[in-house]
Image 1: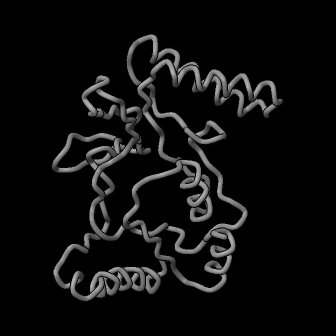
Image 2: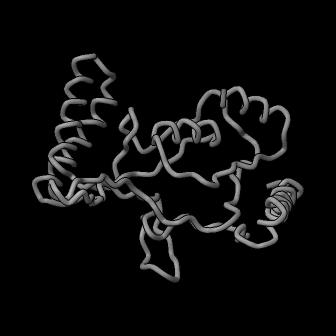
Length: 217
């Protein structure tokens, strides 16, 4: 369905607004599949720096064995072999891996899909407010049998292609805590937007994209 809509947008629009508000997270594979229909060139996806527990090592060891048994292409086997080695080494050292791919190719470089949006090729500016800074995944564990309490443990951190500089945090490539920062700041959490169902916010980001279209970028 998304591919069909992208084909329509490619034929009938001059620019595209991608609404990323109220995104609580979800499937890495699904997110990357959407990006492959929005970015018309090869691109580097987010890597995941993994806390290399024995379960991670076992999971990727089983995946690697399965790929070999099914006769997967050699480059895919090589990618997963490298991931497995990185996990195993980090596990032995009691630390974290480098940025790894979590998709079925085992690669951080993804190619565009056949049906992809090719306009606004400088790629759109991020407009709005910074995200909360949740950039990885956590797993809950029971805290003793009778406490009825739970604790969450970070299993991975999302890693950008380039470090980001902010006033609040040390320069780092992580999404965790730092969040995604807008190129154009527009505050949605105002009384005006609350009382008028976001009319001012929609008008503000519409002005931004119209100016980019008019400027030819």
